[in-house]
Amino acid sequence: MNVKLSSTVTALMTAAIMVFSSAAPALAAGHRALWIWDGPDPAVIEFALSNGISDLYLHAPPGFSANDAYRSFVTEAQDAGLHVLAMGGHPSWATDSSAWSSWVDEVVAVGGFNGVVFDVEPYTLAEWNSRKRNRLIRSYLESLEAASLRAGTLPTFATVPFWWDDPAYKSRKRLLVEHVLSISDGIIVMAYRDKALGTDGIIELAQSEVGLAASMGKQIVVGVETGSTNLDKVSFAEEGSAAMEAELEVVEAAFGASPGYIGISIHHYGSYSTMAQ
Image 1 (tube, one colour):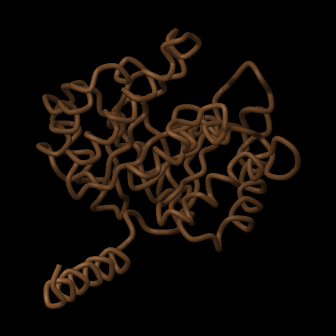
Image 2: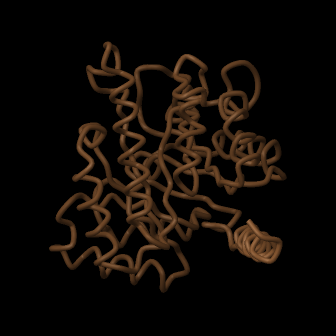
């Protein structure tokens, strides 16, 4: 390569790096999100505004575009100052890339959403505990990458369990969660515990993911549970909303200054809205 061409390539690469590094983050800090599974209910908007919610993860199943209520809800929520992300997925998508692509195309065609949340949990499939696990992981990652690219300018987030930072799930010498971060704008880590501090607390479970997101220039949301579960430690259902808020303040204090950490997501409206104080 001659000197003139080399200088030109270097200048272009430098410019590209500067543009990338100065790009606006996918979502704003101070993110307090709420999962919504039961469709577009206008009551959610008032509840969100009364409880400090900034973002709504609205479940939009394939074919949702046929229901005009989704468009009306998104418009009403955004007029009220809320962000709405389309949320979709199913464990079976891990082996069906066409399901991701057709759904993303539908979300993009409807328009108006502030982002996309992929809730695909391949570890719930029988293949996860078999010799087919590596193939399943590859299929999941390839589909996630293709769908994220297909989303265009819409920020994409993948829901992941806290244990995907375990070296047991390395793929091509990288942690599974690293792969997910590398091909999406960020992750929502399900650190489902009812205490912030100590062994097996929210902070301990999410700490490595927060650090990875910071080192990779990606965003991370820490998820908590409010629904009834078989294990008391998983959810704030028994403790109530006041106790949950006290624990979330500790989480925010621990992670608030970390680059990439943008906030909390609460799972989900149906249980949180009826939870005791």
